[in-house]
Image 1 (cartoon, rainbow, N blue to C red):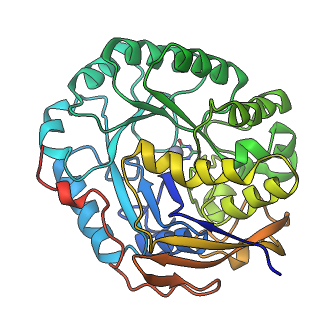
Image 2 (image 1 turned 90 degrees about the vertical axis):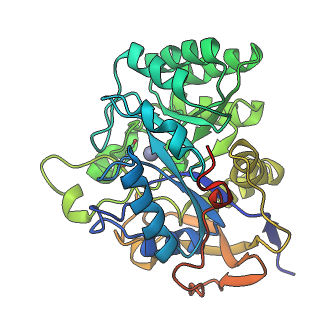
Length: 362
Ligand code: DOR
Ligand code: ZN
């Protein structure tokens, strides 16, 4: 008998789909197809792709393009900008999933280093939709000070260091409204892999030590970590081979097989897996799949991760050649089969903005 797992609407709250001016790296069509092939019902798209999603016109253009092309369900973040776009907040919160504040240097032009400007964004963000933050090392403490002051729900993206886990654990014990995500690459790769991977192992935050990696697994076991998020960030092979390669790796199609393999190896329970990729991210970002939205994974199917077989436009993966056990067999959205284990069956534009009902509402 094959051993299958039915996941209720796997939900990745941290992806960079590209499209717009970076359609050579990935398109809304190709990267939402990658989401379905990876077993995901829905994804939340980050605002750092040019034109940055930092004003109402750029947001409207992205909503229109995703509405036309997406094959999975989706949401988009609005981006906080260094030149203070807080005046736009009251007009844009309806159709977005939350606000993203990038506080350390990374791909793209969005970066807020100034703590007073960060505070301005925290003060201005209306309502209770989450603020997702890119914060590394000491910056985690800077952001926690703002959470303490403004009490706004804050999701710490791609936590990668033992010190960060310690800070977040203490913040949770203090009752602050914080949640934490970790990525499969920080869980499964370390700086020891950079020699073999070269720029294909370069991302922000960068790969770290085995001790940091172990702290992430401990954080999962102890409930400090809420979410496994792919931080899917495709770049072309040519860009990665250049003298100044950009940071970022694709991840949407490898996350579930890698985590199922971790379950088989006894590093994770199935119950925790379901929480990390579906229940917790859904709860944090305020969405819930209907009963006819689910993903079937064959937990016994063995395979080898191969970049050439992926749907992502970039066609490579930092996990090339890894043996995995666990294969996505079917994805269903609202009663329609949208992926059959090999082919994406959904029509362009069939994916919906999960926050659409709020369009126009402040
Ligand atoms: O490695 C990364 N790549 N980290 C980020 O924070 C952004 C992302 C990208 O957009 O390429
Ligand atoms: Zn990211």
